[in-house]
Length: 76
Image (tube, rainbow, N blue to C red; front, side, top):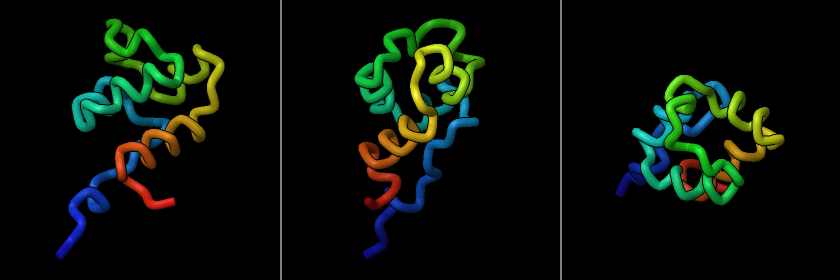
């Protein structure tokens, strides 16, 4: 049996927050856990994960890895 979750595109720093949430709705809660409480604000529609992380003082690579692990997109 093929694992369809592993066939999904992993989250990267250059992806827009809006696209991440659209593709992976559970990412909203995960991003909020990282300290990004404004994931629904209008700016997030045009802001990449890396840009949002910079604003919040977070490491984009660490946040992307956290999202990918929690969403089951990569194995650890």
